[in-house]
Image 1 (cartoon, helix red, strand yellow):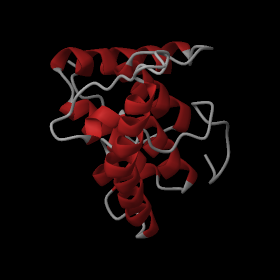
Image 2 (cartoon, rainbow, N blue to C red):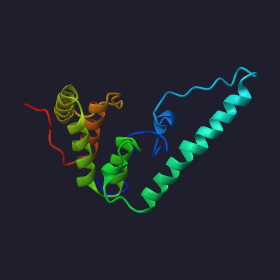
Image 3 (cartoon, rainbow, N blue to C red):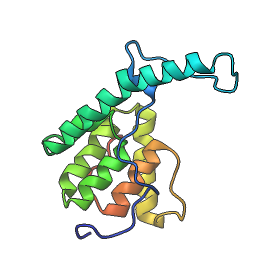
Image 4 (cartoon, rainbow, N blue to C red):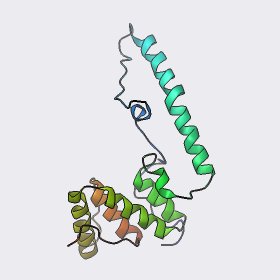
Length: 158
């Protein structure tokens, strides 16, 4: 695949995402009730505080990381979706690194997900890619390998 060719796997301009609660120490689920006018001012103040204290510093750290280039793609794991990182690397013509991100993701996954990846990889090679993007992580990684012809092995294959 030539640099910049092809349609993206995901629709939208997503580069990085994270649940705000994941940025807090300790991480926690966040919910605000804006429907109740009695608590709305308090909830709004907490939203602003959370964005200023957690989200904006995280966005700034991502900007600094991306402005400095991408010396180690795995340094972005946890900050961007693996699929977004794989697509970025593919479009930058860095297929070996994209394959490495896939391989590292599979290696970090549970044995069952590794088997699923290997099975999906074989199925996609044999039957071609399905019309719809798979929802499962391991199947999605296998889809990306076939879609972008990435150099990656089949961890978990027997």
